[in-house]
Image (cartoon, rainbow, N blue to C red; front, side, top):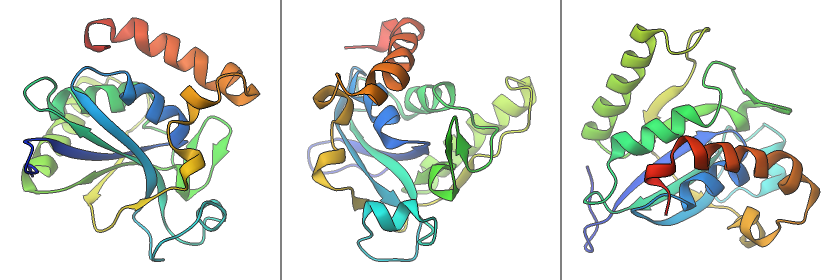
Length: 182
C-alpha cells in the first residue's frame, strides 16, 4: 500500500452522500484526515452541481488519510461496508444516481487484493441478504469537493439533514465501532 513521506496511507471510498461517510471516518482512531471529493468520472475538476447531474461519471467519495500502525486498511473496509448499503445500485437511502454508488477506489495492487478479498468474504458468508454491488476499481483521479462540503456534519450539526439523517447514523456507528472510535 502506498505510503507518503510521513508513513501515512490513503484510502478512497464512495458510500453515498459524502457528508455521512466523512462523519464516520473522522471519528476513527488512526485517521488523521478525511477529505470529501469526487472520483471515477471523466470531467476534470468537477463541481458539486455537475456531479449531482449524474453526467460526469463521478461518485461522491471520501479520501481517508490514516496511520496503518493504529488502524488497518481492513478496519477501514469493515467500517465502509457496515455504514452503508452495498447492495443497492446507485442509491443510498433517498439519494439516487451514479454519484451515490458504492465503490472502493484502490491505490495499488495490495489495496485491490484486500478489498476484493474482503468483498468475497462478505459474499461467501452471506452477510447481506442481497448481492453486493460495490465496485472495486483503480483510483485514477480525486478532486476535492468545495470547502463548504468539508467536515460538513461537525460544522452544521443544527441543520435539519444533519440532525435527522446523519446524527442517527453517527450514533449507531459509534455504538457498533466503540472500540475504534477516538
